[in-house]
View 1: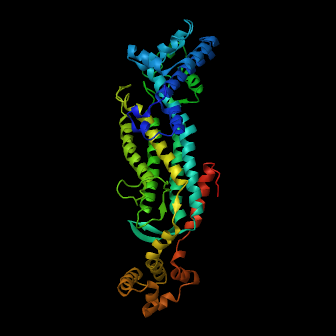
View 2: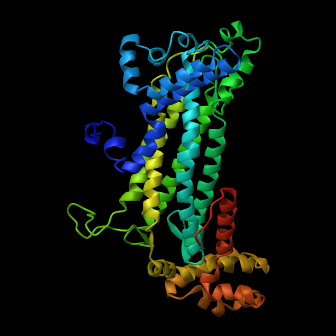
View 3: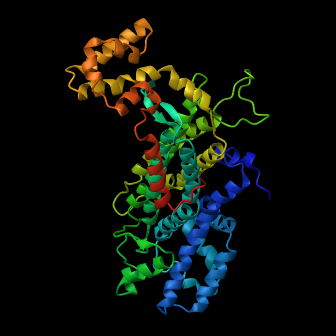
Length: 466
């Protein structure tokens, strides 16, 4: 039956996953169907490890493998209606498809959360490797190309919402190249650290020790089938910090793209208008003001961040589990996939927008020109101080006030002030040029942009288009 997205409850389904290819990508790792599939893979890995130790035959492995290929989420849920237990339902559903010889080896010596925690670590690790990281790297590459393209575009710097000394637009974008690149590396590291367990009901290997002198080595055998390692200590659950750290890496990444979106949204303000989103021919910006072109995509990303960022608090709360385990994380942990989808939907939105980002060079220049003469205040004060002026900051502060009062430039006033001539005459040619051309006062913004892009292109193995 075709999926009717408008009968779903979550806006992640009926509003933010409308693109079929993206929905299918998310579903591969984050749907309920995928969760059951990965849990079944853990049960299969258990049987494979038992066969390698001659506890069961390879025929049993083949039976179980076939059974889980045929397994459907619907039948597991139907079984859960009877058992009132999701993993027992999974086990019963697999056992119903295999011979009596194979049945005893399914779920052998394990507890439910050997399966649940190991499957979650496995699918989130796979999702990070095959979906999250490639998507983030696509956005990172776009930002790198914009940064390099605009590395020499002089832009007024802004601190506290006020014009500061100049940077370049490429330098502004390079901030996010660096921050996002750092988060990509963090996600990669934390996803690799996700752990599994096959340690039984309280983590002490009580059941597996009945059969194996070294149950930890058996645990390692099972997890090796899944390319996972065991937590250094387990109770009924894997130590929660591994998952907490992984989700934190995602949430902090969400913060980076939300900050980027906020910057781009503010640069689209009518009175600034330095960048713009591509606007479709039939797109409407306001229900009553036909002329408006709202920065809806950047606003959406920040709005999504506001929804999902607070969920990190739930992960911190899930660190707490009484004694060997309580059930207070059983519901809350099921919502981690929503957070991942929220992040991916926002990243994919920024990918689409960034491909069509419009930079208005005329407005960037116009905004710079508004206060370019006052920009001279910083290098002037520093240069005067360097040549032993006793109170350079105060002298320049008074000059700025006089410039505003007399509608003159700082440079004009400096020439007029006899008391400053002994110091100004000591300026070298480079220093004099900075005062006569404020647009040159950009430090190493262009070079730094290149350096940042090269660093992360190399470390993340990204091939640039420019």
